[in-house]
Length: 163
Image 1: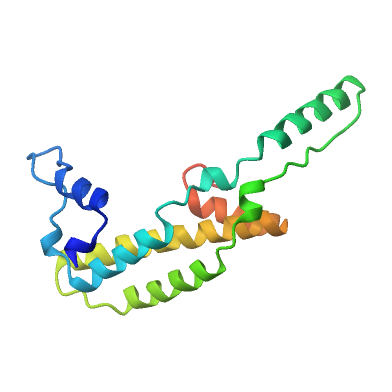
Image 2: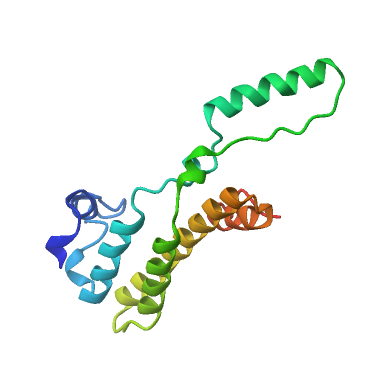
């Protein structure tokens, strides 16, 4: 299973040094096969996702709304911009959401016999929650559900979105 981790992830984990003793940040040999399997599936499902791309309006939309907003400002007319989120509108993460939910349940029921396994389980569950929030973000933007979008942003960026 360790050999099946994507090369760049495996190399990063093995080469990254901790600051204190110049030892590898993580040793892959200590994780349970079950957790390595879950990590590998997570990489396959969501490693290319970038929430910033999801909530960034399209360049055309930005240009159009900027011009409209300044025109309204010059005319002393109230205006609320309405951006288009082309990338979010093209995503369909429903099958990925199901896979992530299944992985969450699998992780929750996984054995944690060592301290490293317990830490791994908590980290994996946090990653899955973050990925599920990214699914919510995409869905909220796509459907115009501001409440879902705001909730997802709070989950994805808890430090920035305190209230």
